[in-house]
Length: 89
Image (tube, rainbow, N blue to C red; front, side):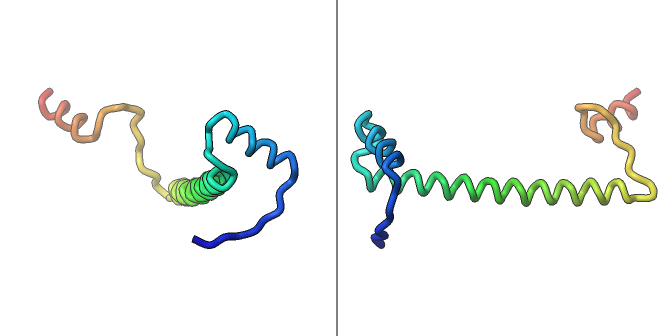
C-alpha cells in the first residue's frame, strides 16, 4: 500500500473524528480510505449511468428516424403469449 500525505480542512477532520468517536471507524486512516473508495464507486456508477443514457438516447433516435417504426402494443404479455392466445381462439 502506498502512503499519500494530504492536507485537509479542520471541518473535515472534525467530521472524520466524529465518525471515529461514534464507532463507525477505528481511526482516521480507515475513515478516509473508506470514504475515498465510496466516492470513487459513486463516480464509477455515474459514468455507467451516463453510458446507459447515451445508449437509450441513441436507440430512441434510431426509432424516431425509422421510416416505418415498429408497432408497439401496450401490454404486459409477451408476443408469444399473444400469438398463442390468438391461435387457440
